[in-house]
Amino acid sequence: MHFDLVVHNGTVLTVNPAFDTIEDGIVCIRDGKIENLFPHQDDSPLPEAREFLDAKGGIIMPGLVNTHTHLPMTLFRGLADDLPLDVWLNEHIFPAEGKYINPENVRLGAELGRAEMLLAGTTTVCDGYFLEDEVAAAVLASGMRAILGQGVIDFPAPGVPDPSRNVEAAVAFVKKWHDVSPLISPSVFCHSPYTCSEETLKKAKRAASSLDVLFQIHVAETQNESTQIPSQNRESPFAYLNRIGLLDQNTLLVHAVWADDHDVELIAGSGAKISHNPESNMKLASGIAPVSLFLDSDITVGLGTDGCASNNNLDLFQELDTVAKLHKVSTLNPTVMDARTVLQMGTIDGARAIGLQKVTGSLEPGKQADLIILDTRKPHLVPLYNPVSQIVYAASGADVKDVIVSGKIIVHNREVLSLDVENIIEEVASLAKVIGAD
Image (cartoon, rainbow, N blue to C red; front, side, top):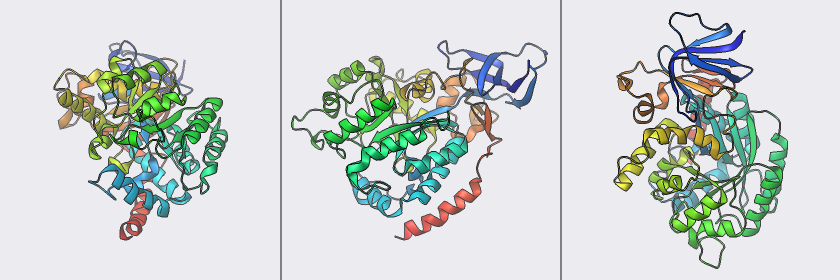
């Protein structure tokens, strides 16, 4: 029996329901899927395969799942820092987007973002932005797995100058990218309850439901959002979204920082999922989401980086470390957000949050072969007593050596095989001179 690819000579961290770890493990891949995983017995020969990948004693684990970002915003990394969210967004980011976001630049920013994510071990991304056709083309060319949402907002936006056609544009995007590739799943992304009217929100959610795709929305990111939403009842953003029919199992709530016990109950009852973006929330001083309460209520929580304009990187390993420590110090409890829980948030729970848990997020027979190899022969990763703790508290995206998506090697020895990274960097640097001089 010949396999397409056999990955061997590493500690396999499956993140399966039993959280099995296989010392000196072997992963056998055929037709893009994991066919078998098992320990290497003594000096027995490796299974026959067309290609072999030696992990060289490193960690073989599921690729990370980034549940929220805006890839083209890599172009605005560091453009406006140390500002409140409303000032940052309204006085800097929205104007920059209005002037510099066009199809060519969106494609360029997405190419930079996909290179950064792949080199940091992210194999699946959930993105939401404008001109998402360009993002989809860039991501597809990279070989990544992605949920991609066309942005909906009640203002003139890049690619949709007439706001009355915002949902129509999102529907057209979903229909265009449906079944183009098993790696790409289209989605509808409403910016927020305060930038979209009730009518727009309902219309967009109805469209997403009829098309059976994920509905994404920023919600309760700041403390004063309840005063901004178009509701006369002074209800919480979650109560508002629930009342108008937006909360269900196919809704991804991004940020969800300001949620009280009643909100948690509403979310849990609806089956909606949450994307937690701790570093962005910290940087914009938005607050600390009650993630422990979410988890105690069996709400699925995945991790996201948010866009580079508010983070300022796409390194999900850094988010793992941050989320564990942030919630320990905020609750004064060192036992909350343990390493295993956090790693699940960055892998299988992230996949669950965006509806891909049957496809990716763990290493199990029958699932897509989306995996990464960490080089553990580095001073900051030695000694290695507990691979899960090492990943969460010591590793970084720079430790990722190899990346495989759907059985295909995308990054090998830290070289992105599907991209000319140096050329992308040069193009972005050239554009940044224009943006920075404005």
